[in-house]
Image 1 (cartoon, rainbow, N blue to C red):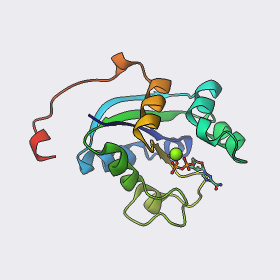
Image 2 (cartoon, protein in one colour; image 1 turned 135 degrees about the vertical axis):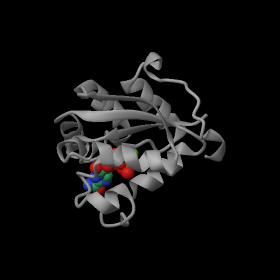
Image 3 (cartoon, rainbow, N blue to C red; image 1 turned 60 degrees about the horizontal axis):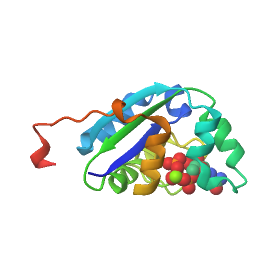
Image 4 (cartoon, rainbow, N blue to C red; image 1 turned 180 degrees about the horizontal axis):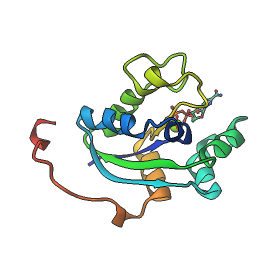
Length: 147
Ligand code: RTP
Ligand code: MG
């Protein structure tokens, strides 16, 4: 079963959008299997954004993600990585269309509210960076056959 790492970033927490963002994934039919409110360490932030290490905005990215609490989650389901990135919307805020989280709530690319893994490999790396396996919950939902 595919899993993805989703995180409400510090701007989403400060703006009181945790509930709104979680609702978007829930109503899509995705399954939450782990979640916690936490501070990201500098070490975790640098590992999380390792693919962007050479980019000019890497420092800002690490500063931002460690600037305040985040709500980290793991969601599970068929095609959950692609589905959740569709719910989130485009990275560049001017491309993010209404109906997506970023399209509805974000007005600056640096403050785009939510992170979602972009591949199976990143998802597993990012989940392992923030969660231990025992924090992830296996359970059956009665609605599962229709999703
Ligand atoms: P994320 O990793 O946060 O879910 O976002 P993403 O996959 O949609 O975008 P990604 O390319 O991984 O970039 C990570 C974060 O870096 C910032 N960014 N700034 N100034 C720029 O051109 C630029 N490009 C990306 C964004 O905050 C993006 O979420
Ligand atoms: Mg990314």
